[in-house]
Length: 239
Image (cartoon, rainbow, N blue to C red; front, side, top):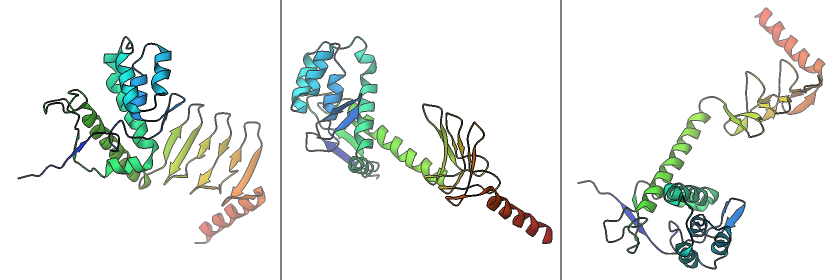
């Protein structure tokens, strides 16, 4: 017989609950709880949203959210809104990240007997909050595993909104077959293991033609770099 662990949660003292006090920064706003953020996104009227955000408690936020005029597409987007809210809550606070991961493979159930959609209701509810938390837990676990694989594999390129590209290996700037940073303005920088370094040319190149030579994170002259290259070539021919 296989034993399946179950964790039931409810109320403002439980970290998995939307009522749990944990600041969430989204939409250029700091929300005191996940409940504040979720309820405020329901409203068609922005002033009603502000009242919810300013509510002194998550319970008050929920009550106001139940009275506001919902956005026209609310039923279509509410699951996504909740998931993004949970994602922010559990990734912006490392203690909560660890708490969620430490639930391991347990079935998470919101033990709210008065809500048969987000909670378990009378025992036959959909438990959508619990399901979203389990989905988020898996997403975080998968991301951690992928990062481990990347550390053992090859540099990973990250592209930023302005077009800048950076290559990382083991959380350090690193690339052996080209510049580790390609700035959006055309500047290129070579890094090895987090250090500004290039042995076959300048480590920093500007679009206007200016070039700078670096070895092991220390500025060097072209002659010093070329001298090292000459030594290596000489060793090749004499072996």
